Length: 65
Image 1 (cartoon, rainbow, N blue to C red):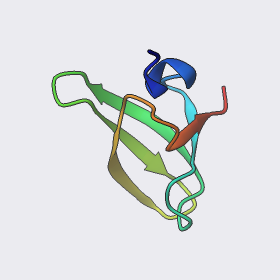
Image 2 (image 1 turned 135 degrees about the vertical axis):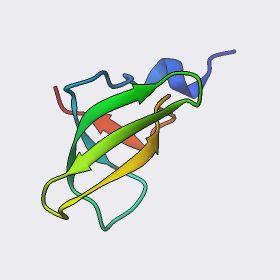
Image 3 (image 1 turned 180 degrees about the horizontal axis):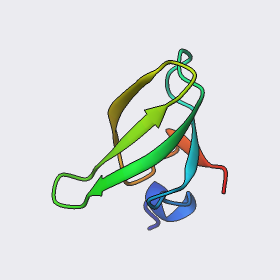
Image 4 (image 1 turned 180 degrees about the vertical axis):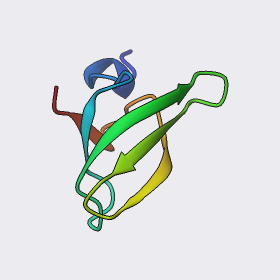
């Protein structure tokens, strides 16, 4: 059986991501990854804020580059 995280590319530091789960965020830049908590710190320039997002991708974001 495949995990959904195997079907979706996981981001790395410096990756641009598009949030697919919430409709109020646009493109974000990954600035930090904490593997112990499975979270990544993402800066959303259009919103002017940085937030924590789940790192392992289950389809809630797309990696742009």
